[in-house]
Length: 338
Ligand code: P6P
Image (cartoon, rainbow, N blue to C red; front, side, top):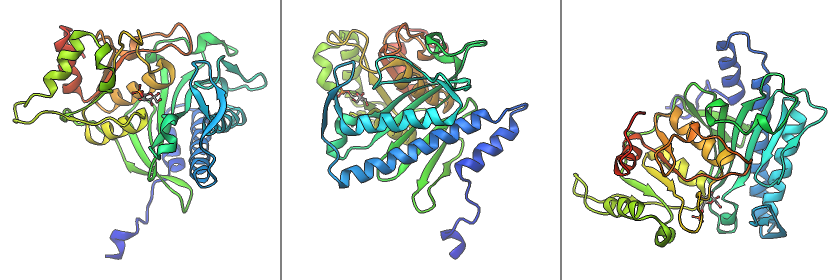
């Protein structure tokens, strides 16, 4: 019985990265170092959030970011922690953050990667104790680039990695570097992420839809009809269940664990949706595709084929279980090619 309780061969994230690095031919190890810096940032932010709630550090910082969101103190802290971790890694040349109006180029870095991040996504829920997270997309600099905006204004298909950390009851990390998705959970006692969900796959279908119906007055009739259809009894005699947390990382983590459909469509208020392409839609879509799911915009176009014109560009998004996103695509008369 003792054996069942104590795993004597835990796969930590550093071990996992070294083992996967060995599988990559002629790897310089730079990507592994970058991922190690990322995991340090996640641990540090996780610790800061948990400590902050103890010292009442939450609440408004009295400043606001470029899109006018009121910045919570933790937003600012998370952003600083993340920027410092990327700067000190030596592997990052270019950084985009939701909290920074302009691109950051590290002048002295010889790094060959560009990192886009939302340091604390869902932070408006922080005071309510809702799980928030850090979402990250990774690009290799363009050949010959010394770090410029062109390194990040690219289609999502050029990403070399994506991950999110969710700071919930436990701290979870889902990571892809292009060959599937692996899930880790932070063991606070040893301070390491432990592999818990190797080769995570999204269920093909689960009757769960996740959307903010408070926006339905502003949706197109096509979208209103689609969502109404989900509320009718389906073949199994039961309607879909509605689950919406309002923190993308939390809504998407549930989707990875249980399946279903998450959507943030455009509406007459927000013409191109609310979620940002580079550090919300792209990384979540890459993870979903790598786990066997699908990610499209309102028009049924593949998210990863889109290219931002500005680092804070937004996109409508429908993503999750393949059959459930296909159902939306068929509803709008889009042929289902992928
Ligand atoms: P709404 C949080 O502010 C966020 O950026 C995402 O994490 C979340 O999915 C979305 O906005 C929630 O937006 O309009 O439903 O409150």
